[in-house]
Image 1: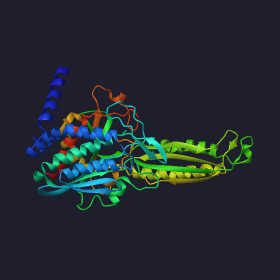
Image 2: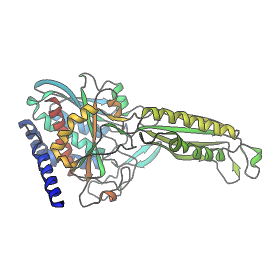
Image 3: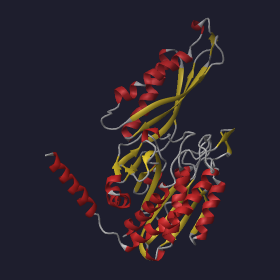
Image 4: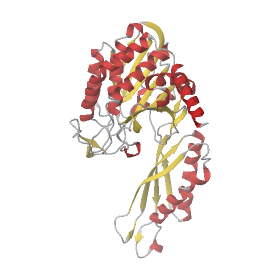
Length: 432
């Protein structure tokens, strides 16, 4: 019986691969060109990794990208969304306008991975001098899109429609008091002149092996909103707490009470949600009950109605808990990133392209994640598809891969050519 099952499964696997449509001459050509540009892409990536820049400060990165794009003969615009670069490639045949996006910014993280292209750069973040590292792989995104631009420029006479290459600053968030990122680029009209019909983006993934691609239709990454809760008490001596109103005890109660929002108010079988307190500030010494305490945190949701209910419940709990202690509480919930939502029809249409690149068994449907991405701002305006590209070498167990945003973050250069093939083919296949 088991032998019969194995034979059937083997037949199904062979059938799945043999039923993939035969590649056209243009599809084969862009994959060949991607392989040819791989060594260049690795050099670009190493340069970008060695010289990262923080959000809205990607001046050298933008200039490096623009020089390459101009050398390809593309129409190039710089200074979009502060430091962003946008390039236009007009195909030789009529067709849709397809946008491809890569984010460019690094993070205030010290790099511990030893390599010839290790970053030793220093930047300024919130008034402090900080080390800078591409600790989320945006250097790979830029190198992949530079390679894609080179590939598609070499077949432009055979391309249908127009390609818009978007190199975006500040995905990790603009500095305090500044606008930036995808939201600002959309505001400045990056999806117009010409009007974009569809947009594609990818993210390198530590913890996913090279050669694999993960995706999800619909809600893929969570919305993200930060919040600040300010608790106004009445200062008094620590030996006489009855002489004041204690904002520290109130803060502790608010933190605990807020944990019931997700566990007792959210329909978690529908979608995930998170309320996290990341910072508590108040007081100066052991024997003084302070006048004020500030709480800072983040809200993540994969459903807009659930997100709005979290906003309402958090404010109610914080204010009413404060009132019960005689404290006055102010709640500020800041505008953040929307849900990263993959257009279902577009995802379904383009899935065979990814399967054609790495094989059907290496393209995996994955659960939604509570991380956030400002690619979501583009998706609010036009259909978009955002997927995850494996970056962990095969000799590293997925569970042992260092997480994003850490000093030990590392992804392998061999992922670049797969990304270039995927992005190039998405353009060709969407337009056919």
